[in-house]
Image 1: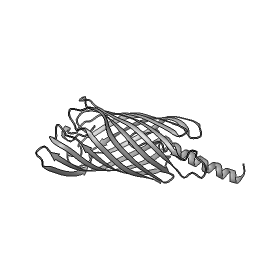
Image 2: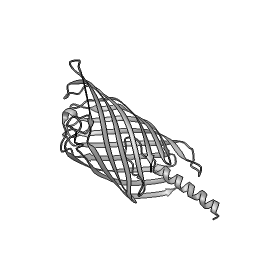
Image 3: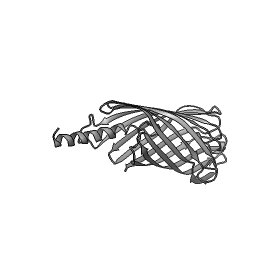
Image 4: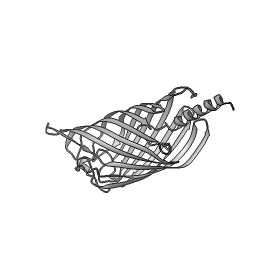
Length: 279
């Protein structure tokens, strides 16, 4: 193979490799991960609007969250992620008054270990990864931090074929602390099971070439949460995402799909925006 052909093949290989690792939607895990020594900085801003909370005795709650995430490749098929969420919360109380608070919610460490990978050609791949880690107290008060260590374990499967991507994750969370009054989903005293499904479709480019520098995706997710007190909730999450070689951008939303809630507030609406930087 001549040198120009080698350069073309190398550039195309890098593009395809990046495309296969970009199949991670906003709220669902993926069995893709950064390569060893690669760092991803992911910043997201979320706005949440909740209805009446039966334990807080509030008519509605609005919350703004800045979620800071660092994702690092430790070895081939092994990566770690750290999340640091900072929250601002406004409550409309039943007596007509308002209450404002802010703080740092529990920090979260998640390890991802890929145990299976079948690359069938081009960017087509099937991957399976195990997930494990824990959230732990940020040091803030109980309005935002559980003051405990809460292990979680699960797994995720990712399938990419052509312009299509699919992710399915499942996570069990042991909540050893938490307060029902400040629970807006999986943060109370009861254990929780998260189950999320994501579909991604690459809208551009139609085909990757050596000149491709990024890709646009539309995403659709169903995000589920079951708590052992019986509270169950499903949300529908549409999104738009761009993934480049060194930069990514995402828009997201969540809408109530179905719920059976007795001890926490129902989500009315969530909107978000995020960026990703690859180092």
